[in-house]
Length: 87
Image (tube, rainbow, N blue to C red; front, side):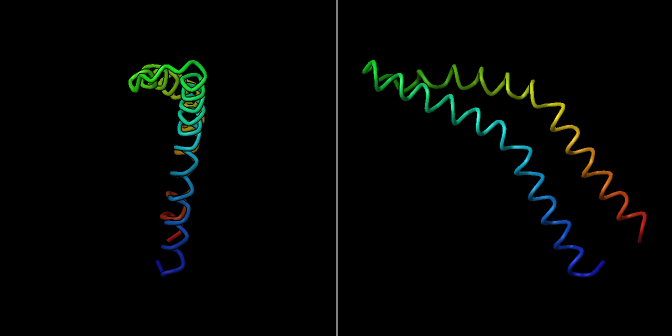
């Protein structure tokens, strides 16, 4: 394996990590902004109010996006196995 192939595999791994984490992070961001906006509008200044809805939303998003994440990881593993077999 030469340097270009190693960089290609590393780049693919980083892109896979971004694809796997983006849906959950976006859901967490949207829920956090929504709760922050609600706190600003109602003037409730409770710092712990954000945690419970965020945890529930992230858990539900993990349940929803888990098949997509599994498919992405399976495809990446097939790609890596094909490269190993081609050596």
